Amino acid sequence: MPNYARVSILGSTVGGEVWSINPVFDPTGEFGGIDQADMDAATAAIDAITIPSSLLATISVSMSVTGCRLEVRDSGNDELQAISVHTKTTATPGTSAVGLPPQSAIVFSLRTNTPGGRGRGRVYWPSTSVTLTSAFRLNAPAPATLLNDFKTYMNAIDTALTGAFDGLPFDLAVRSRTAAATPHVTRIQLGNVIDTQRRRRDSLPESYVSVNMP
Image (cartoon, rainbow, N blue to C red; front, side):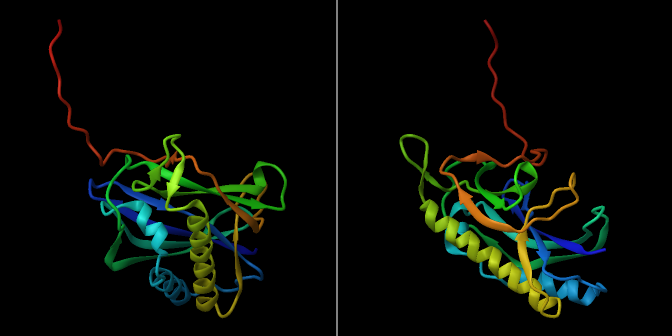
């Protein structure tokens, strides 16, 4: 069976929380045999990519990109075929001051030629340092800049995968487990409203103050 790749960009916060984004990449041909050395080369190459400055500016100095994980899964049943994890020697921190709660995120919407929900996907990029307008809309970094830099980053991951897997081209894709399909992305959109990255907060305990009543 043909396979697809899930690339997880891994990160952490000063408070101890972890986060990730998990885009899917589908090859334009078949993997054939999967060599662990190729897997490890791919994660090392992905971790070596310079993250565009506008994306680093959104995650704040209290967040860092710490590494990546690559999973190759069966396109028919999503069964895990191979995995590789690479940890950066030195984490890459954000570059701006904290401004929003840790689960704040901008949302890159992925569109394919497949109609309906099975042909759409989302990538939530942590955004605790963006500037909002008085109408609570994204002001800076500029949405167009973020969108173009995200495209550049995804294309660089494509290139890293291709280089590690003997020149096999990859495309950013959306995975539908329901349809057992992995349509390729033809357009990326970015809205100007901040969303919430859905993740657990177990590692981010709160400090409480209290007062007796009446």
